[in-house]
Image 1: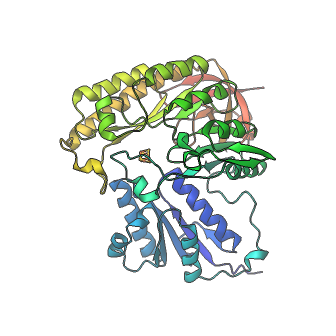
Image 2: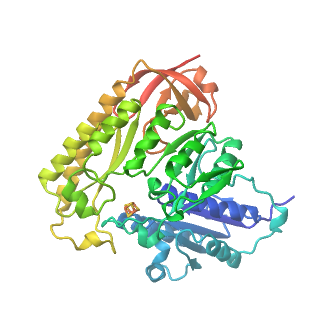
Image 3: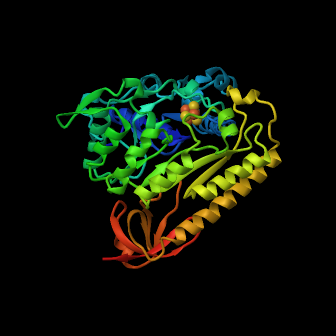
Length: 441
Ligand code: SF4
């Protein structure tokens, strides 16, 4: 039988949160009988899910819209940049529709207008866990939208609104469906994971017949019962984060914290208007490692924030050495349109930002190399991401997909593994980002 389903192309830019939005749109459209395609040419309409966080991301989004217009011509724009409909229509007057972030209904409506569904939605089937754009063995679990903070360099609260947490029962129900569909690793994401539930006043909702509070610790505890790897992203070092470290030490959730510190110097943090008191963070990291020696900390930092002096930058480098941050990404400060920090005096010249970025990354690589070297000789569990003729590419519990390192298993027996398998390896080698290991029985 000839397949007559209307085809929708989707281009998903930006962060993991935007990817979850794309997944929701894809799930809904598939349920309605649309076919999702990876190419512009065969598509009846193309959705471009944009990112507008930094000016460089905006430029990339404009480029993606331009490419979709050139190669297809029937384009719906959604995502963070959608709040600037005027700017988009100015550059691309013929886009079919523009909608903002997490306006799933509006996107689906725009698709209906562009190309009506061919099937009765009630007759079409979609797996109950939804459709995911990430490999099947791991999935992002979005626990809230928006953010109540007002970091001076950030326009996310303007783009995505105030914190809007999902009830714990909903999050846990989705997590359970994902795990029963074969997902082995849940990546918990939001803008501010440790603030989860604040807006709901930590209200309880039902899961497995029991009330569960919408609270970071309660959610982490319940997720830890599902038998999957649970990885926490975008956690801020609020005091109550201390409470989840024992769960990591007990192996209930992964010994991994992704905390975007952004800086360490108190004056820079103050100018950034960062949430949480950073003063005692070093002591707290030391305590966390006492409780859970295997804890890996990932972070991101901004270099060249307006007014950042050489001394303040060096303070940050020293702090990183002392904190022994396992993994770090760095951004050169960008003067994002609409961000309050744009008006700050003493903007740092581009060449200084570039040079500080290089120095920070070099410092980080040296720390990372030293820390990874301590893993040599250990037998650890890894999750397999890919398999080819030479072996398997896997990840340890200390590594998140796409942003951290890999564990390479180059051997004949590893070619028989499947993505999603969790196996034991002995680590034989390390460099500044990756590990190499041998399968053990
Ligand atoms: S915590 Fe700060 S940087 Fe993160 S989304 Fe909220 S305002 Fe932006």
